[in-house]
Image (tube, rainbow, N blue to C red; front, side):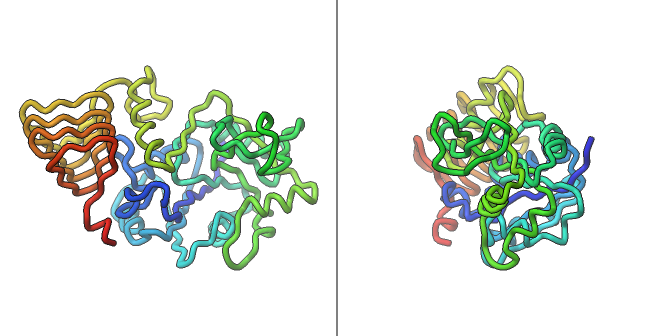
Length: 321
């Protein structure tokens, strides 16, 4: 196994996930009652990562406090950005973390079972300056790849010849010299400059390997729902198949009905006669007697006294922040 260091891009404002991200940074959103960050770290550690660094901006104090108080199973640092630096600036801002080996950078709002060791081996064999993991996802397809596996352009390619960037990339240290040393920048712009002078920015096309982007509420909920339909889990540790996932500290009243895909978090209370269907409840949620929660995501500390359908509900204190 080829060892490496890795970075999780976690500084974004999470605007597409609002209002859920008003109280939690998106890497701490629970997936089956466990923060997404843990699934990302499991993935990187299992693939050979020796150490991980996260950038942070939005709710950086919350993230830093979480990291300091939890055993994550791998050395993890956090680097706060007082002003957002973009993907390129974020990578350049942690230049002291990298060494002389290729490193991995990945977005903080994805779940993946893509073979990272295979990506790294291909990167080295191709003598690439960067290798981007691509997949066929029509909603995001923009990257055009040549017959030799090199990336040709990042936008405006023919729809039938374009693929989507998964947010997973292997980067050689020489790329750091191309990223502007000050201010915000996009790593894609640096890759475009490298392509223009003939450097190898390669594509690794993942076919048939699990990858999902959770950057919007409907996709976040859909990921929970699709796992109930799997016979086997593509992500080690995530529960596949039907059945509710209820935290041991949650309290269920009499005649409570849990239907379809349901995740109920820590210290939740679902009162007598309530129904929770195809929904995710974060921590400390209270569902009142006889209430129905259907196809919804309920944030930390919410007290529901009436039924909700197709809704995203967060505590009023977060809405006012």
